[in-house]
Length: 365
Image (cartoon, rainbow, N blue to C red; front, side):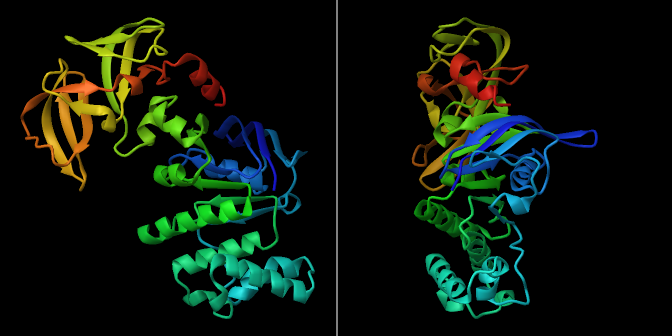
């Protein structure tokens, strides 16, 4: 397996700039997620790694070798597509063995290798079946088998579970991660599903309009989003935003929201003007004695928890609280915000006010 390094890679399609000077490193053996909405540049980035698109500028290194202008056939990678791309006239075993036969491997070795991969994927009993009658989950396993059978340097996957229903997606997500851990493979995985990315990824790049908004481990991205876009895109429900005008000096311990004084982490600050306070729903608590007030406008029952939506003078806010807490629409209550978890954003640029770590991740864009 191999490290993949992307340095100042840019991709233009005519006058349209699809990827804007991206830089990041995928370490050997990582399960790496490229996450973002449709049209953000994540699939284009993956295709440039694969050699299906050539970068307009910048360099791509796989296992230390610069491959940016080399065709896909010279990169020793395996690509798994969303729509499986199986050969319909071949059975399962022949689909898996095709890359090895194309390389001229002896038949006995091919048979042994296919049997080994089929055992890993749990499809030994369907090797002689045609692919046309298989379930979506089995078809995806066959596509994975064809990719991993020749031990490439890296696996590149473009939303491979996108065509499956919710139950199969969850099951295959677990299987993919377990397969990755077993093989120690370098895997790059494109998705628009933030839950999938958080569940499977060792590292995540979040992209938007061709720009890397943040690069880091899932917990860091969730707890300390570098931009408002990341804060909105990651989390269900997403982060709450309360808009206000004020000055927050470096090392400040509070911000003023109306009549209420809200504690914030000391590492935030250094800005004045239009600002946005961000807080996750699970860090909002109903406390009638708290000075910051809101009016309940809706509740959503989720089993063990409920989502309560409240209207405040600085915008709506959602709280995730236990389902046995009784709240009624129209009642007013106090809101406690967990000071250790709050984020502050410049309302104009959308960048988080968190100097050192935040600037480091922003510089990747």
